[in-house]
Image (cartoon, rainbow, N blue to C red; front, top):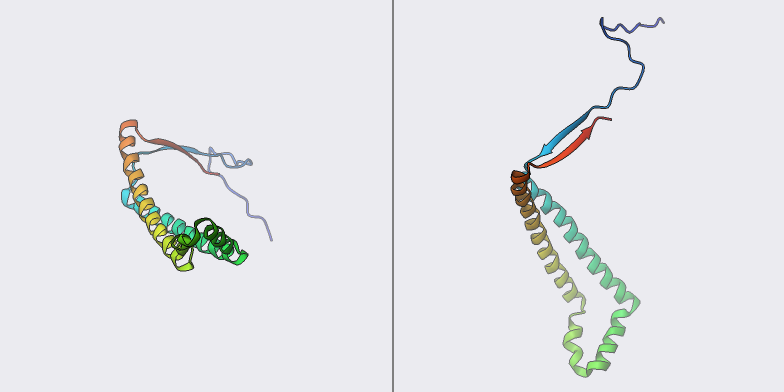
Length: 138
């Protein structure tokens, strides 16, 4: 087989070095609020699920090791019979319910904070001109 020569147009030299890196500077002057709501809701959903699972798994670990039983004994010794109401909060059903309510509050609050952050950024970007971001092609 024969080699096919590379033909360059006139006026151009064949470059043997690597291609030049081009840098671009852009300004971020607007964040779409609906996109920020969607993104923050997905992130807060992931955080809420993680927190819920960590609480449940922590309770299971503490119960398996016997820390909850020891805590019931200590509270019972200190408070006497009046500690039953406090110890009822340490049951699996109560811990699961409180973890679920906490996850829902976390989901709503982080979504609202994400959208509020986008609105605040847009207001500040109007005053300051936005954030300059640099990009390169490597």
